[in-house]
Length: 557
Image (cartoon, rainbow, N blue to C red; front, top):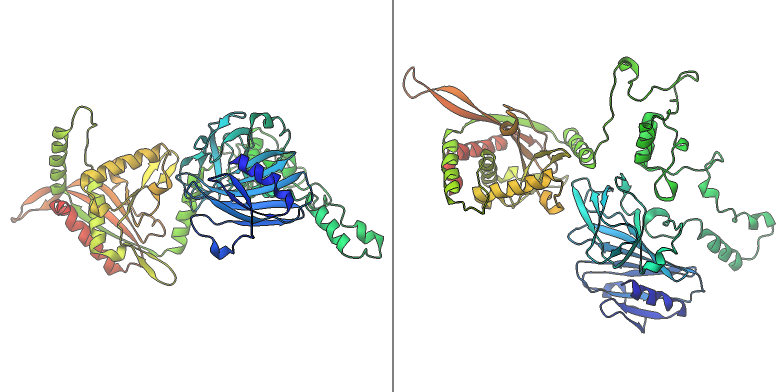
């Protein structure tokens, strides 16, 4: 693939129209490209050029073949040309951005931080699987990326050699599209990289300092020279954007780094940046604080007052020691979504007790059947109480579909698939994998799905398809923690979530006068979005759920 691009660049200076087919690696001279409406298939392409620069926008889909149309004008001989491309990662819906730079006959490919989930705006590098100088083939895992949902493997879509790693293991808050590594076609080209720096913006664009002078010189040549000589010399100082209004050097930092620096009263000028082009990232601030370096004084601190040492709180808690635990991507997103839910969704709560003696008896009988039918090579299978809850909730949603909906400003969207999200607590944070079409699955299948998804959640290996598409959520704190009753926060854009408490023995009145019998009860609480589910509808759903739980044979019909 990189060889075909080198061929395209070698003929780019001839000023003709070319058609490139990656499946055949051929170059043809021909008529101008068809209009944008003539493009069809899984990929669409566009091109642009200016000031002797050759650029091409490429979009990949899961198909291996593509066809590119672009028109090349007359280009002066320049040592640098540029190709930008957008690639779709295998097994991921997000896009991996990469840029190609041809300098002195060598192609340097910038690999950017991909977008691996719909809500992902930045990611962390968990671990590099390849080292600098390693050969890379299409499909090789380059690194593991921690997203806002899980840790995913990033696969290479190109063949070549990993020339330089721009972002080390453990780097955090890397914006989507920012270069994380460089690749070249041959191993001999690794030495020619030297102190190569990725282009500004992280999207394969040329550095901002280089383009302005040619454009300004061209504009001066096209127009008559202005009378005052000072005006002609004015456009020359290109370093102006690098300087701040105060005249000092401008310090580049990510938004997360700026926020943390303001909170901890740290001067960015005292922190050495390790990001692209020396920019300061959040990890630099955290390392600076961990090293015990003195922080800058806050705006209201007197000149003679020393800043508080790390580990000692200020104000009323001045004598209290503490430790700051960095937030993971998962915890940040969870906090953001829960805050959004409580601030924008009008919650109300409905609780009732369910009599589960028949359910527990049926569960024991089914587990005995599963135990007797298992073979030596298969692990033991057991149906949990939570599996019955998921099945009952799914069937209740089918009976009362108003609860299987979500709110929009223009309409209420009612889903025809019953996908039950199951809250799983992990050391990385709260994960919510989805049991798809739970109303159509048997108890044994639901049990297997939950065990598989919970294992992936705890090992932080969930894929986007494992946690997307939920229409209703079940959160159980009763079985593992013995919580009797609680109210859960709705998981937007869903309209309901069921909080399941523990089972407990109670004494209940019997059929005869003065007769009392023991019984086992489980308390459940339904949180509803009042914009979507009225109180009576929520009560109907709980009634349907209660009937399935108290007569569990109906779950198997």
